[in-house]
Amino acid sequence: MKRQSIALGGVLAISFFLMVPLAVAQQYPVLRLGGKEGWSLVQERWGVREEVRGGSSFLVLSSVSEGASLSPTVDLALSFDEPVPSQYRDQQGRYDLVVSSSVLAGGSSQAWRGAGVAVFGALEENQGGAGTSSGNPQGNPGGGSGNIQGALGGNSLTASVGIKVFPRQDALFRGPRRIEDFSIEFWLYPYTMENGQQILDWSGIHQRPDGKQVFQRIRCQITRNRLEWIFQDFFVSPDERQGTTISLRGLTTPLPKSWSHHLIRYEAKTGLLEYLVNGQIEGVAYTTSTGREGGTLYAPLVGRSGEFILGQRYTGAMDEVVIHSVYVERPVLSRLPPAGGYVVSRPLDLGFPNSRLLRLDAIAYPKIEDRGVSSTPWLAPEIRLYVRMLDAPIEGGEKEWIPVRPGIPLGSEFPRGRYVQIRAEFYASSDGKQSPSLQEIRLSYEPDRPPPPPSQLVAIPRNGAVELRWKPSADTDVAGYVVYYGMASGEYFGTDAAQGPSPIRLGPTTSVVIEGLQNGRVYYFAVAAYDSAQPPQEGELSREVAARPGRIEP
Image: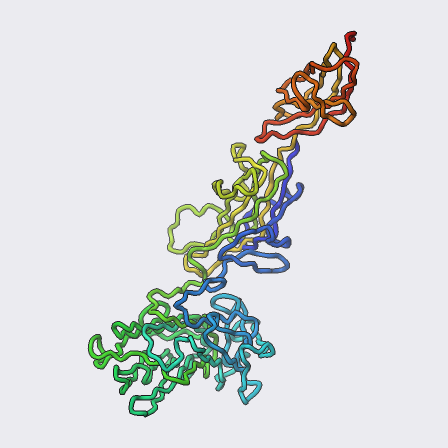
């Protein structure tokens, strides 16, 4: 039998460059996954997205936030992945946004995670600062191209309005109300570290039992090249008559034009308030009458008319702003999911049962190879490929995935089948910053075609029988032959033979006497070969012959 090659290409596009010379594979028919063909043959994916580069589709890991289901303890989630600032929205639907015209939309190449990032500090086109509502499709068209500095146009600090965030009825920061644990986190990319820049600001009004109204504030600002959190009358005594002012300032100076993670978290049981930078605690305070653990606990009280403002006086970018209704113990700092991601192709039909997979080639970055023993704490991004052979497209769950190395011929002992499925697993670098990239997969295989018909079939009339003889089928995998007979040309529905009705299954013989036939009646015959596949494949019929049994034999 002739060998045939199918290249799976065009659906998975994760850039790895591992492959056997593709010129070899191109001499055969090719079934492609990825590249310019796209990844339509993928039926299941998790944690992986498509990315188009130069007309080809690549598969890469999604960032932690993309497509992830949000925990019910998440109160506010701003990913800034929408294409224009006017479409920015809270993914939990608990807050409404009004976006200033000074805010621009950065793209995925600028973002810490996901498809976009909010860029603050561009010059106001409208000095009135009216802004645009998050529900208005006619808002600021944005400008997310190039690097963040380019998006800012090199402007110095301006008094921008930023993004106003208004709580709905079910929001954690909708007052007046007491709250318990909470955490606020975001990623920051400051263009400068000038004093006075305001990253986040919340304000509300608390009315004391004596009727006096007290202004409340939570502010995150840059003070002496460090971030400082100020809580003014937000933590209130049990009788709500006294408030306190607490300030926490970081120990390290965030580098301009560099991403850093910032988290403020509060534990209501102990009154512990902590400020973390890149997962490291840099400030600690207790919201108690003593300022230490113990004493009268001053608990959070959200006043009425509260609202947040993001980037009110700030030049730089902000990404993944999240408010939690819990004390976040371990913030997720990696860009990419630690568990990786995967894609699974649908069962690909090789045309015939018992077909043999010859090899799998792939184009990926970095190159798919055995990693071996590591001598450093840093691991490169990686893609692992698996296949499984199926006899039916619905039996996949019962078959084991077999790991394969691209470009390496598979042995004759490799499982066979009519269908093949491919699984690609994606793993980020050990620091969670780099994704592998798969551009194309090509699959070469040898179809197990049915055997060709026997040749030189002849029929010899006998008394009440017909003897058939033929030359064997020109195939090395013939397990036997099938004789078809009938009383009209091309209609093989005979029932007279002593061996049974048509068709009659035989072993690996090249002659047979069909007995029990009626003398004087014309019978028509054709023979097909079948192979040893499970189930056996029957080939085409031979040329037809006819004979009339009689008492006078030739």
